[in-house]
Structure formats: C-alpha cells, structure tokens
Image (cartoon, rainbow, N blue to C red; front, side, top):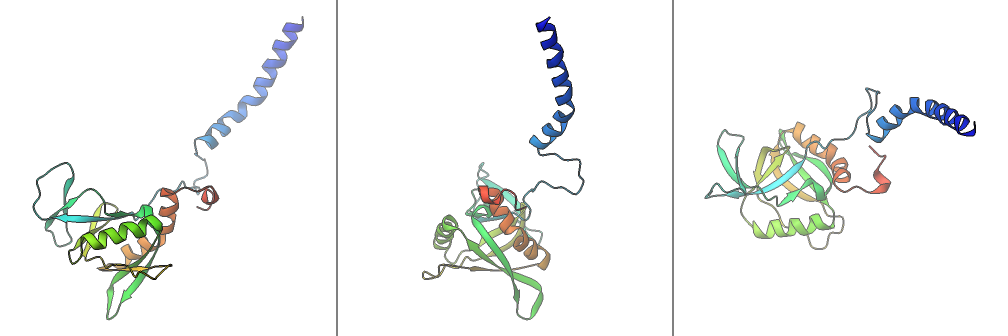
Length: 187
C-alpha cells in the first residue's frame, strides 16, 4: 500500500512540474517567444590584414575585391581584430563630408598588436576589412609612447555608414569577444 501511494504521489509531482519544463528549457537554450528579444551577434567586425604583393595561393592567402573593382591578395592571419578594440569613434574629414576617418582605443593586448603592426608595416599600406569585405587601404601610424588613454587615428576615408557602424558596435563586439561576468546583461 505504501509503495502504491508513493508511486501516485511521485506521478502527481511529475505532472505538476512538467508544464514548466519547456519554458525552463527555452531559457537554458537562450530562446524566447518574445519577438523583441535579441541574442547579440557581432556586427561591423574589424580586421586589419597585410597585403601580399606576390601571392603563392597558399592556404594563408586570400583574394578580395577592392573598392575600385581590382583584386588584391591578403594574408588571412589578422594583424589586428575587433577582439582588442575597446571603443571606436568617427572623425569627420575636413572639407569632405562623404568620407570619414576612424579613431580606435585598444586594450593592453591591442596596444601591443598595434605597435607590432605599425612597426612591421612602416610606410607600407595594410587593408581594413569590415565584416569580411574590403573597406580601405591605409598606412598604420605608430602610437604615442606617453599616452595612457590612447586613441589611434586611422586615415581611411570611408563612407559614414560603415564608420558609424564600426563606432556603434565596437564596444559591444569587444565584450562579446572578451566575456566578463559584469557585462553579461548589458546588451
């Protein structure tokens, strides 16, 4: 008699708990029935690549189309990426409202990468790629040594839409690529 009562009690508890399981599973899988909720996906992802003058078509080389319809080859090992880009801002070009420059603020590793990039490519152009598409060629400038809150200017002359997108999503992308418990709910 006791085992039968125990079985019935257990069955009733299971029936009471089952309707909430789907909602709990949705929460654990980060899905929601709310159409306004959004799981963050990085956008306007920045990559800076070195240009290959004499391609050998190896696995580390890729051909991309530049803005003028020509093709250029880049090394697929990034010299710099959004992972170390803390913030970005748009800088208007004087006398040219149709193009903008960018300013970047890096984390510690980003500063080291930028110093290496500007040293290795002194006087040589590199390619700025946003979301896998060619945006501009530019020559990286070395950072100022005494600046703690350093902003580096990229003289790229890109369209305002792309520049504003990079600036808008730089910080969110940084926290996406460098998760920290205090930023889990800031999106």
